[in-house]
Length: 391
Image (cartoon, rainbow, N blue to C red; front, side):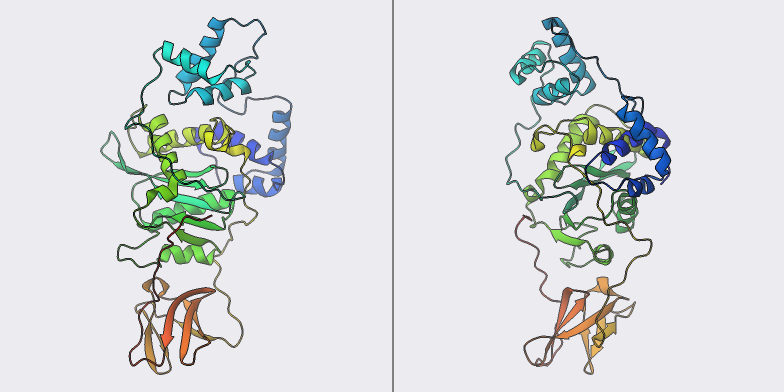
């Protein structure tokens, strides 16, 4: 993929950070970043030699043992002024990375309070939610739209966010003009080409991954199934089950939207790119022990295929192609309804243990039933959304 002109340095540092992780296929990573292996290894060599000019960020010199309290306060305030939404614990970890003798978080908090840098959070403290975490990167990605933001030119910006559940690595932060399935698919294709494919997505029940009518299956979801990606839905009206997404959105608001105005969609995307780099590689994250998400993330070994796979069926199975304009298939002289999302798709009809009863499948996914013992065809299989958060 070509470099974005506005964030070349951030892209280079992102490459170096990911390439240093244990077990990463560096040549595959070079391909995903659109660079040659020679260029990638050159950057790694320069980085290992201490060349930090790959990134557009300054680094404070290591502190001396005799640093005065005034100098410490200046260091604390410098970090705070660069990142006005960061609290005491994040500043302590940042100072430690810079080589400063790390003060206690209470000391940093006192310095911030003394200099008028403490502002009470809006709406008080957020309620605690039940925590879960997948055991490895790419086991589960969480995806959502943050509420739209009105830009100075009057445009509505819909931020699309994708977060790796294990590492909290932000894989996608895109300024979108709408929330359609086509828009999300275009943005995800870029993320898949760069980071590979996850095992599953965790989403809510809204558009485009859900259907307002309550239908479980959507064309967008079928596209993910073809890529071998399961779709898990949160329980309706329980946003706390998607706590990582909700927390990420609050952080985005506090560290970007609350601090600056954005004129148009292009400026919003440039700001998103810069902030996502800071979030992934510079900002300590409390939920992972004040580490940065980039230190825990590894690209997926499952690369984005050049051609969308079709489901494979065993020889001898009963197969039916759904018409592109109807939601029915024919079997035993009768028409049987299937979800609209599978128009044009090839389905399998498989017998169950009960006489006269069959299941309709898309690959291994059970999408509808056939009951020949009933006088009328059945409709869709019951569409029960998961009632618990994924563990």
